[in-house]
Image (tube, rainbow, N blue to C red):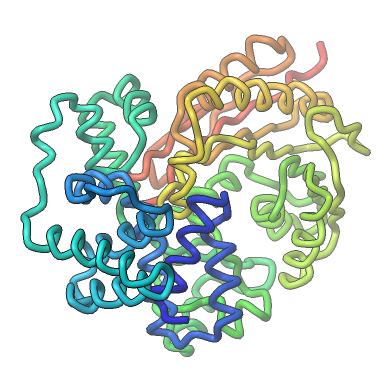
Length: 433
């Protein structure tokens, strides 16, 4: 199969069959044995088309005057993406291959329909967004983010703030790695990565983070366990947690284990329990811990809303299930999968987890609650509700130096430092009176 045939297959599996873009692409790349250039093009087309889907439909819709099959519409989507956004791909190449694919799949009639639509589209200038009267609807189309999300951001951050968030989440994400400081210093790791010809720049946002370029998963130093892949905003959970030697720590919603293993890298004489509701994900956590060369941990299955944990903890991480609106540039399909009505059930789940987990805090112990979303109901609202419903729980301030922040909770917006959108709150269980 050609790269564009693979892209059509992957795009269809994500948008029509509910697949996860990263898993589908990783499996496809591994199976097909594609060279680097083809891997890059495949990834660009699939992620780019998913990310721009609403915008693409806005531009191509006026040119579709006949009933098309779903695969034909998907083929138009990936081709229009190339025409508008991929300058290195000549229009004729993208269109000609789309016509060839259509002919293979549907015969001459399907090929003629695709050819006519794309040729007409190519000849006309792109229609302006100015004709969309509603500012919310206009930004939704421009940023390819559903209106209900834009409307929420507008309510809490203003229209200018909503635009900044949407545009930031439409940019290409940076890649960060987390230094395994149990085995190597950040400065030494940067030197090793440079020796491999990989771009590596120490981050000013978090002390263990390195911004990288290139295929770092192919690095021998990844295989040797000297670093993990993790966005820098997620690493800030460890700054709020502030683990100390000897701490006994729980990562209650752990898979694939990043935050709990980050804490384990910091506590020489401590212990970390890593729990997750999905039993099949426990081996993933164990595999990461083994790769990193870490000991003094236990990984086990457990529903955090009702699990009877084996001990009391000095510190607990609850990286709660959430709507994921802060990571839509890495998981672009999330924006279409989530619905406004999902939020109430997520809030109820988050509070149920916190209400159970707090029973396993020692008096005076720390609980850090985090999400990878930008939604006030799941973040500030959950934090205040949890505290108000539990008289033995209080806010506990922490600092994030890169954001010049000190306080009990912080919503990190993607435009602030080019990170994922993230929320972190810190609580303390009151000492017994």
